[in-house]
Image 1 (cartoon, rainbow, N blue to C red):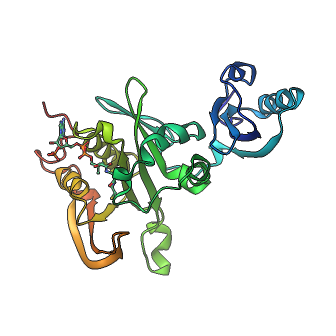
Image 2 (cartoon, rainbow, N blue to C red; image 1 turned 90 degrees about the vertical axis):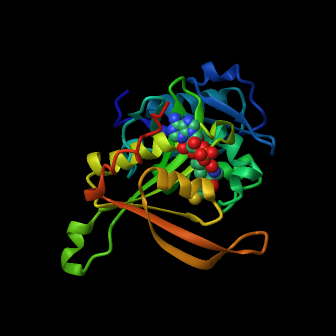
Length: 271
Ligand SMILES: CC(C)(COP(=O)(O)OP(=O)(O)OC[C@H]1O[C@@H](n2cnc3c(N)ncnc32)[C@H](O)[C@@H]1OP(=O)(O)O)[C@@H](O)C(=O)NCCC(=O)NCCS
């Protein structure tokens, strides 16, 4: 199957399907949802997907929803895996819903995030939105364990009309969420270092930015470890669920500042 005819698919059916159906359904990943439905995800060409749907019909399983996404048509800034000493960074797929949900649903992870839907089904709808999927970078240990989902969103810099063409795609915004079971080992530092390198050296962008709350010390310490510059501190511009108004910070790095001086952007390769 070539990259151009591969479709990522997501099929929701009524009832709970056992894992043993997977091989019969072309190796689809089966997730059993709390609402009594099952979701099958995988990658297939058109005729293989047709085979999956026919197999489901033949055993009398009721099809509730079908969602397909052509990976070749996605506007994904990360179109190939990136390797670091300890990690693989790769584009997200529909099969990453459950591994990321396992930590995304935890309160400690959401302390400084917008929030997480209460059910796996709600989370799946959010995660698989094409715009979200296209900007999500999965971080895996080299052995294949998913330990985080980061964001790499390439966008146009502001420009006057006559310069707009030259400013197209000249900025990247980064974001990060690490499974709390894997914090404290420098994995986020290593992954963000690679995303900075990719943005400047592979994509050739002019500027990379990221935001966080002042109260999210782990996040701004990460940016400072990597040599990013604190450019803005806005006062009480965001409301936390606790009722507190939060200060926000904006960080950035420019292409001509890359790579930062030795001792900052070490990519997590310290002993
Ligand atoms: C923000 C977040 C990704 C930072 O994770 P983190 O584990 O602190 O970052 P790293 O993986 O780079 O690890 C750095 C820590 O490991 C230590 N470390 C151990 N080995 C290391 C190595 N080889 N290289 C660098 N640091 C290493 C560092 O000293 C540092 O610990 P410290 O802060 O106590 O000094 C994480 O806290 C998170 O996902 N939070 C929840 C979601 C969130 O808030 N996202 C950001 C929204 S803006």
